[in-house]
Image (cartoon, rainbow, N blue to C red):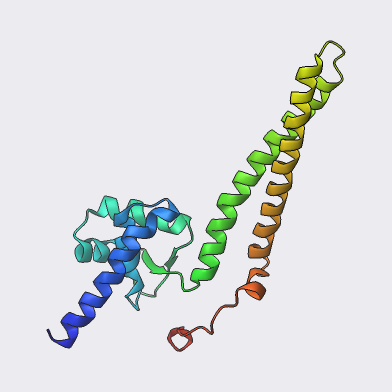
Length: 185
């Protein structure tokens, strides 16, 4: 096996690993292959170039690149003299993860806290109902305690999302120096 074949084999291993794990971002393996392929290109690619390299339909490439773009994993770029859309992988994977993590968990936290507040209001009103039995009152009080625990958890999770968005997480888990600085345009 010559050097070029070894390089391709090494790259293909990474591309397939990305394809297997891209589901964590809610994407398909084909989007992972597209992302992995783009990662190893120094220059932005058009949909036609991606289609040719991956052997997938242009429609599939377009759908995947849109999904990758929505998650801020790739970005559209402009290049003088090129009329077609060009796409490249975003260089800052840390920020891409933070964006995805924050978007997903903010939605979840908001949904849960709204439901907890509404249920706590209803249960507290139920406690003031004079017709409620002692047994039901005890059950409601236990449920209120449970919901306060859940509320504390989601408020903590909201603070965790803040720590990611404010980059305070890097004080706990530092980033190694960027090894690709010399490749930045």
